[in-house]
Image 1 (cartoon, protein in one colour):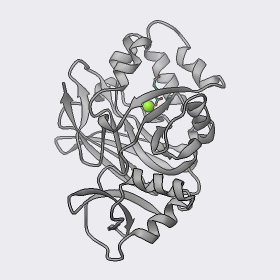
Image 2: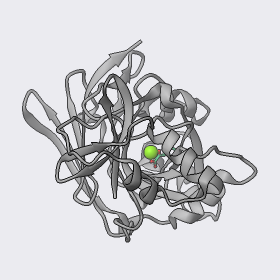
Image 3: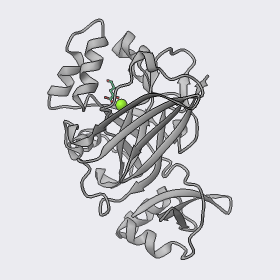
Image 4: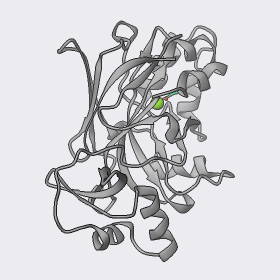
Length: 281
Ligand code: DO4
Ligand code: MG
């Protein structure tokens, strides 16, 4: 099943997506749907199916979930660790260490406040000269870290701020418009193999392709359940949170985001997440 949120009678409402049309689930946003499924001990997709209206509508997908918390893992693809080490001036192998060791890198990425959905602007901090998109597979977490579904994420990052000093990581990662999510959440019964997804990313500027990159999730160096286990370890991450699994596509400095650029991330089994970039203060 594919779930999103739409504006239905003036309320953000969860909806099932079928053949490009949506069937809203009245009185529930995605968090409310997840909370109810857990409270009643029923399957999320079954609950959605039994409460969705029957008539399909043509409504634009919004952010598929306003996550209670957003978390992210890093250096989960060799390309990400190698790029960061190559660029980093101070500690050689700093990122390779995390790539290699049992404990993965994880960090807080924010709350719904910093998240945007399809076609909404992603942020370039006004004090960053090298902000890059990070196209990632993300999982939606239920109680105890259960994977309820998959979506696309853009872990937009001010790499120049991170590169200056590792202690600046939170400032490079958390700010207005730093995380795009969407366009849908695909439940695990429909997306059975998250380790064979082609992720592509295109940046266009003035209608021309500035950058294009791709990676297959088979290059993800960790099991998703391992990433989840570390993030929820001694940490009661609430149901309805999101975890980004890291980038395998690296955008270099010559393609740093500028205002007006459009970033489009695609995975055929999930869809297309497109966002314009803008300066944020
Ligand atoms: O340590 C830096 C963050 C890495 C990251 O976000 C990624 O690899 O996706
Ligand atoms: Mg990332």
